[in-house]
Length: 408
Image 1 (tube, rainbow, N blue to C red):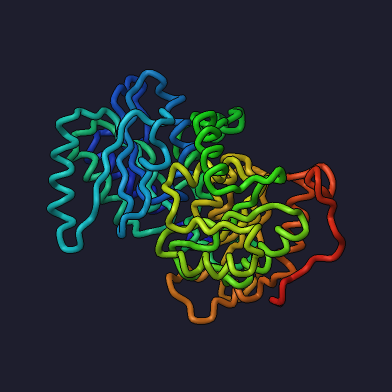
Image 2: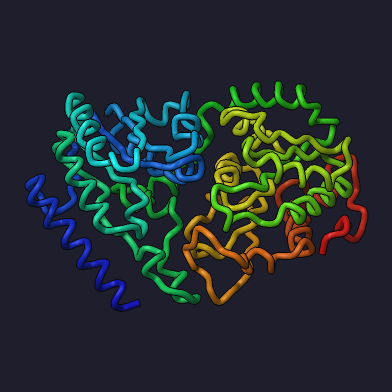
């Protein structure tokens, strides 16, 4: 731990030296007169959602500036930041780029030339590289900001130990910040700004209208509301077993009398169908591949509760203040991808190999140890604390011990 902290300080000193060479300032002083700001944050739904507080902090710091988001959604047609933020005015514009294996250097040069023509004053790094990926990425991105013509940079700083450096154990957890907090700490006054902000989704009225259409179209609300179950995840190591999701969904429908909307991408249809088969037909709707990003947002905002893996649906639910039961793998440190707010319950099993940071795992012991019984108890607690003032939903009383639908 001591060695890792020393390396963090050395890294910040190296970053400061490069900043001094490229921009003539060693200290990270954000210019007060910036009028055109370029913010770099790549990723999909979850990566975008956890960056929203920091994006709002930048907006608060520069209320008269034009803020453009530079983002890359990755491979395979996954949802981009535009799908999440479009219409919210959290940022003013987007520059979306994609990476082609073997052509990264040429593409980066062309992108820098394209950005240079727009005359940005400030480049703000909200990159995941500051969370522990290659330090060389931060140094490279600063060179890119200079090539793009930006006259100053912000956010190039390691504010805490990256989770990959922190090791294991309870002591290690205390030095790893949640990603949303880490990004806020990169913006001057960001943490204080968010503590004093009461955030509401900017297009919530539009989402309610869209949700009403979705609910009517799929007959999701029979007077008791519905619960969203999201059993997929981009990484297989973060996916709890679909048959266990199904057993919990069965419990939810039988005990609380609510319908279950199962969401996911078209590629996750098999997983979602397995979950659906565990629920009585009149209580289930498989929406895998049938919703775009905006419709998913609407459903998550309207749902009584959400049951999800560690994925974008979890983060959106937390931001919408929809109660969420999150099944967390042991891939990352417990604090790293903690959802925003307190209307959620995280389920996690303690295993010796956590965190492992793997993208593949044959045993997935951290997930197999989480039983249906634990999940049912956790959901019952979530319902009691955050969904209903008592063990009822207005029409259906809690009917005694949980029913596990045949899965242990």
